[in-house]
Amino acid sequence: MKVEVHLHATLRLENEESGGQIITVDLPEGSSIKNLLEQLAIDIDPVHMLFVLNGRTSGLDQILKHGDVLNLMTAVSGG
Image (cartoon, rainbow, N blue to C red; front, top):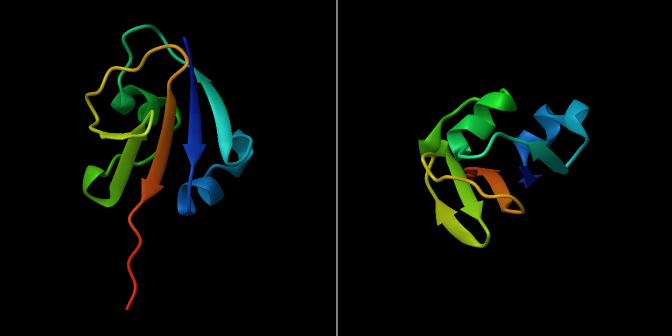
């Protein structure tokens, strides 16, 4: 199945060789967000990341479906 992944902030910069901000990832049926992150070799730190699947926040165990759109964002802080 294919999932469209939008990389934001530092994730985009760290994964430029993957093709930029929006990439399409081919995954086996039944894969979760955690499986996708492992395939992309993205450090899994759910405390400092936001997972937005089809416009709704999700967790690492959320199962993905063909055609899903996943936005991956790192936490940003300032002062």
